[in-house]
Amino acid sequence: MKKVLFATTALVAFAGAAAADVTVTGSAEMGIAGGTGLDVAFFQSVDVRFALTGQTDNGLSFGATIDLDDASDRPLTTGLGDISSAFADFTVFVRGSFGTLTLGDTDGAFDWAMTEVNAGSPGSINDAETGHGGFNGNSGYDGDHNGQILRYDYTVGDFGFALSAEVQGNNPSASANTDDAIIGLGFRYGLDFGGGRLNLGLGYQTGDHGGVGISDLIGVSASVALDSGLTATVNYSEGDLTLGSLDETHIGLGVSYEFDAITLHANWGQFEEETTGNTNEGFGLAAAYDLGGGASMHLGYGDSDCGGAGPSCTDGSRWSLGLAMSF
Image (cartoon, rainbow, N blue to C red; front, side):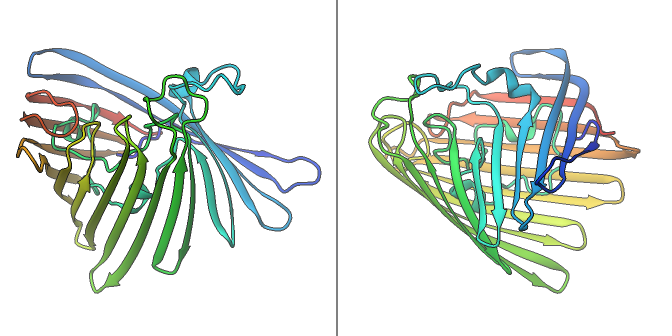
């Protein structure tokens, strides 16, 4: 779901450099939400995001993003002994003919390469359709250290690759035994065909994962988007997906369909421990109706069946119904 509350562009000029653009975007949502063991309650959220971009005299692009919701998480000082474990959603980048270098709360190369099964989904106001026990956002080991990821990516034609690293730094809250950096490698390939496009992804990550020693994770994804409005995605990954020492696999499927003012989506996923056979699985549903003028109605539902595998999971369901606004 595209979250835009308002958009304003300011032109800032200063001596010796090209003009820079500052764009402000955000989101507002209101409605009701509930689920298993939860009372029905009102739900509302507001978010504001700043994007700063500029260009040097020789054509080098640069910029940064700031999420106002997370601004308070950023420590007031950032000395060598003061790196917050709740690193805020800030990123800084430089881009040129050599590619793009990004630092901050950004996707590692594994996540950058993989397509999530909620591709094409309209979303819901509380993300119920992606909050179930079988959903995998493909973040891999991102965030295991201090949340600051350095990623280099380069795209030529339909092919792209990325390399990323995350180090513990001086974060006292990082998991034990996390001296080694988390390294990621990702590849993308897109292919146009009559009536649509196919996107393929391959990702790999390795490093100290949650204090259990060196872990490895590999994943593949395929997503097809048709001009008719249908999007279908599958992804698969295996390795140490969570903080346990058991090898795990995950498979996910998702389908979205957009027609006129209506968008529908469904996804399913399952985590399985290879040695025990334990599984966590779930499914999610989302629907939206575009009211025009930047407003849309959203309905979301997610259901989990937890069997002791994968990330933390709670049996039952949750749902939401509400209005998302963009201006």
